[in-house]
Image (tube, rainbow, N blue to C red; front, side, top):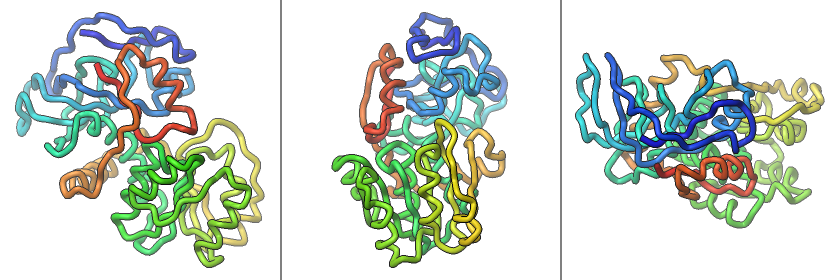
Length: 320
């Protein structure tokens, strides 16, 4: 089968497509024939060596994908060859024609969703859910500010927050991105390139501030986020690419909190809750992954460049 291999950490170009042996299912494992693989910013951090402890070279990148079950290992019940599924993690990596997964990493994909949409569920939706409900502990009626709302995690967060009764403010740097956020359920969308956008956010809340901010680029935004917080407001840092300076008094006066998160650190109990909630949303139609671009597996390096650009809209998907 064809798969992307990384033999050294570095820029996107270290990823090479190779012919490798087909994986085989062991006890408690499933082989998935992949028709789509999702590209996430975290994939680029691992490839660059920033999460080197999580990968032994050489390795195949990718945590998200969708396809059909090709074979099941010993001791597995409730799964049948040919079942449509999406994966949230893989033993052998998703940038490939096939992946070996633990049974806990395999989830049903409703017929109404394409495989490309299925490849956009795992990391984006689990990250958004974990940030909102486990870290920030949101409640219906909260004002939520989603930075970078046109990306994979951003669109997931907007859909989840709107479906749960929150008031959603989105930011986006392009007309297309802001329209996408509104289409996915945001009540308001502001241009984060506008020097007045912070005041616009405060005006939307009537001057009281936002209860929760989901921050995708903390090194750029965090210092400006804190004055936007309402009393007891929380910022959940989902992404950052460097250091940032803040004024702690902006937290102290609001009794505010900054919370970090990495979805790989979610507990087994939290993961169980996440995927149960996502299953309900995918089934009842409130969750609809947005696919922004589909590219061949051989163009994985270009996809890694594009996923880190602020103009990315929706999910970038590789097609094996």
